[in-house]
Image (cartoon, rainbow, N blue to C red; front, side, top):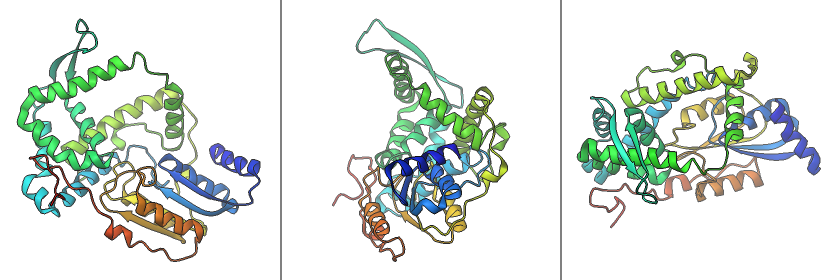
Length: 335
């Protein structure tokens, strides 16, 4: 509620009677609290990549979300004739994880800026899971993921150890000179562990998910169990886990490949709001406006100018999709 009150304080300081609130990602969660506590200050609301407040644990849907992303990527590839002919996405994911069946892969990284500095690391199946999930987070990563997985699995353990070991070791070396980010991390954990606290790895829903999504969900749960036990913030009451409902006009923007706030979570929010419109953008990942989605910008502009008017969302059907990277380096949209 305190963060929602800050939004209201900014409105008062700027002298507005009402505002149109736009919130991406965490901002969409904050926006729902503004809608709950200060609905009278809102002319309209745009939530870009929204997760319904009814989630009681931050990790309960994490495996489902990862599986959602793989399933939708698979469907998108199968609908593309050239991609379907070149790749079997689920099989590639399973093959990449199978390379770790005998345990972690050792790798020694040599710093190119200082050849005398070497960093021994162990690459694990969890590193591969993080790599796959990270590629699902942006459009370029998504359309190149099948090709990348094919190259890695064909190259075998040595190629995977070199790629992921280089990423891990160079990240460690770069962190020596990175600016402090503890405040941002603490703020994130304070929000998560007060609103959607994680107490047990058993909170992850694993029904119907594959090996990749299971590993991802378990990893996330283990991390947040530790964080929430350490940060020890006061938990919000159960009433904050009830989806907000208000007559304020709301526009929800969602990418159908979003693994952070997948469409099925935004749909729960849309169902709870009597005056909400959910617009889904094919081939798009998390947060539409920041990723230069011109169709989303057009839809949002229409809504902001007249929240009560019917929206023309035809651009969601006509906007070009990025083609998949094919084994020969071309894309499936090349002539």
